Length: 117
Image: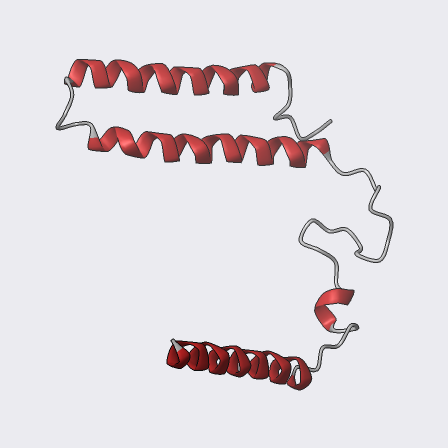
């Protein structure tokens, strides 16, 4: 019991020593190049956070996320090829893809994909 306590205490002190050394040795500059440059979205980091942004940028991001999630949901269907009936699997896959295509058609019909507005 005493040996375990000593080892735990030694690990605690060594880890705290390394944390204190890393804080002392790391010289953070608050005015480095990355902090003064604009973000990926093009906003100036020093200005107001309430600047309006393009709705088209947001909608294209949502479309990307939907199709990205679709890929993640289709991957498990590949594993079902050996376990289920191929007709049932094809019905489920086509139903899933038709729902996605109907959503894309709805966005197209509402002119959400039109970048000229």
